Length: 522
Ligand code: NOJ
Ligand code: CA
Image 1 (tube, rainbow, N blue to C red):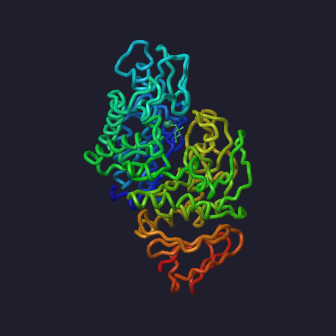
Image 2 (image 1 turned 60 degrees about the vertical axis):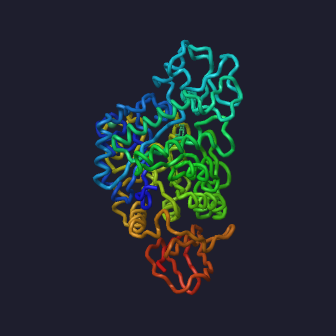
Image 3 (image 1 turned 180 degrees about the vertical axis):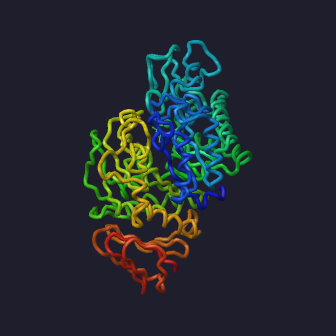
């Protein structure tokens, strides 16, 4: 585990929406470089950039056309290298998004693979042996290739699955995992990793990390074996590189050599129960009764979260890795859709002080809204969480100088759209609250990823939630009424080091006014 992960706080940037510096209506590398000071000042010391490689952008860049070339709309490979160097000058690490499970249908490997005549890339993707039989049990596309086969997809139609083989071979067209062509796929992906690590990146967030080997067993041992092979390469050649999996199975991913795994909205209902206890309709409207824990009148239940989180936390600790808690990501509805800035401050305070590595999604620090927009670049409902960053009261809220009609996605046009400029002026803003909290986290090892964690009070359908990290006691009351909890194990008063609202701890009792949070040094 690279030491720098102990105190890492990540900031996720969706490059197309961060800052446009050349007036073409879309974000770019130069825009990220110009805002590195802002990111550092906020308290984030690591970045995760969503895919920034050459792509037809049918899935926002998760359809890579060339792994070794940046998307021209963001800048050149040299611009990205400059971004790495500028980030490093400020003590910020940069993770790229590796998409190992599939490519764009426009990738050169796929163009070769779909040809009628066998060639080096014929088995680089998963093809059936008969165009009219399909690929039972998989998503597949028929009727478009020269060769007389269908191809298996990993996600959208434009994302053919790369071929890492099948653990249980059930059809003649399924290659075993040790087939030389499947090994070649793995080696090609290692080459991509070396290419960017040599260029100066600090590791990868790995897209659909669990998706590689098909017909895998319950423990996903086929896919895990590939990642262990990658881990050997990283240990030997790039021991400081960090790896975070999009897998949500730390008992598998961390053993396979990842350092972190995400608690995700799609996989973990417990995580959803903190911020988004609802489903979305086809019109992107909230449906269902919302009992989110951080909703003031939601009457939420922290034990729903804990029953999901605690076993994963234990797996993480056992395997020397971390759970990564997110405020949101590019696939998730921004929490501001249903939560007020006050509710968000309490939620982030907990997310940033639980064990593991936290990830802040750009714009969540100012409470950017979810906009109900039609799909763009394969975003569907996710599009509303991907709108341009809101910097100031200038044109397009400071995102771009282009005419608003030329923006690749609209900015929030509501009169009170939050901006960084406004938030910076208000000492009690969400932004300044986060800054203060992250400053404390960086100063205190006991509030960082690895430090000891213990629950002091967490009861079904009750508030507050009280926990311990090393020498600190922390408590939150998201509800609209005051709450008290007996914490008999706590002797003495403790010194309050951070608070949102009025809170006290003493005589074995913790008292919190409505919507408050506190940290005490014991
Ligand atoms: C997960 C990514 O986060 C998402 O944005 C993408 O659409 C799919 N994987 C497919 O790559
Ligand atoms: Ca631009």
